[in-house]
Every structure is written in C-alpha cells, then in structure tokens.
Length: 226
Image 1 (cartoon, rainbow, N blue to C red):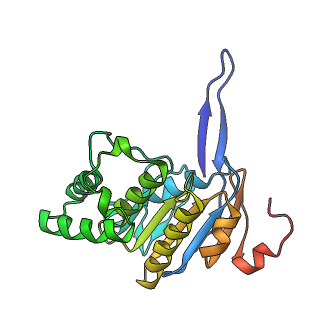
Image 2: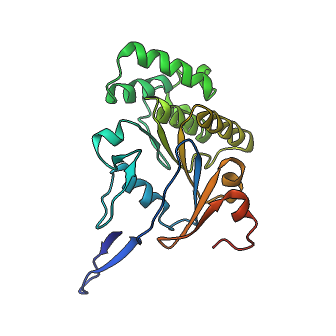
C-alpha cells in the first residue's frame, strides 16, 4: 500500500491509504485497461510500477524485473497524464531530447523519430515549436515519445484525454498496432467508452481498492461498475 500524510493545523497527522493492497497480474502482449473515477488510485498504481513513488509494503515486477529498478525502466515506455514539454522545443526536438536521455545514438534517434512521427501523423509538424501545438498534437507527440526506445511494456495515462473523436480513433489504431508487435500496453483511463473499444482485459478501481477484473465483455455487461 501507499500512505499519504496530511498535516492539519494543531492536529495529529493521520495516514491516508492512497492505494490499498491488491493482487494484479497482466499477461504479456495484451492491452490492459485500468478504469475508475478520478481519485481512484489509478495514477498512484502506475507511479508505483514505474518507480516514481515507492510503496510502504508489497512488491511488483515487470516481466520478471523488480519495478522501479534500472533494468525494469529499460523496457518501459511512459506517457504521463497532462504531460508538458518545454515550449521552445520542436516535436522532433522532444524526441531527440528523450532519446539522448535514454542513451540512444543519434542515428537511431533520427531513424526512430522519423518512423514514429509518421505513425502518429505528426511528420508535417516535426519542426514546429511545442507552443503552437494543440492538445491533440501534444498527445500524439507524447505517444511517440513513449514508444521511442522500443519498449516491451508501455504505460499510457489518459492517452486520449482532450482529443477530438477522430484523433481518439487514430490513437486507438496506434495502440492496436503496438499489440500486433507483441507489446504489452497498460492503459489508464476514467472513460469506459475508450477502454471497451481497445482493451482485452479491464480492472476497475475505486477509492484505492481493486473492485473487479475481467474480460471487457464481462464487465461492460454490468449495469453498475462503481
């Protein structure tokens, strides 16, 4: 579990469990959806798996590698919710920057960036500065960044948030292609309509607790999910 400590004026600090103990296993090569309302603990779980925050108890592994370790991070791609990049960078500049952080050589960065910009349909804006991008364009560049190091497991936190219907469909098509390549996609969303269109399995969280998990068809047949 993970505890958040809030200090009240003149009152004793009380621990709040942001994420309660859960048992979760995701098969390789699937698109897995983590569904729940805002504040359910979805992003907290993702951050635990990425090693951004650390649990007060419990363990997790990603393809046999301890979550949060350097070896685990080497096979991970991540698109955060509400991500921000420096306004002075271009779309290609963002990919080059993250490629260099990942230790990729310039030739590989150039090749992968060109491929990914084409896949997310951002090639014509590759040399446009980020400050001129719409929300949908930012999401597309973020998705390209998450795929840059050719990861085995990709975490996408609200990847279609703020994107128009056509853009959402195109992003779903990119995610489907990742599955075809044998990638495992962990999709975090509060929108059932998005999750049921793309995911193989879904887990539902509420108030830090794993409520239920199963195939999409099983869960969408329920009248009340949370």
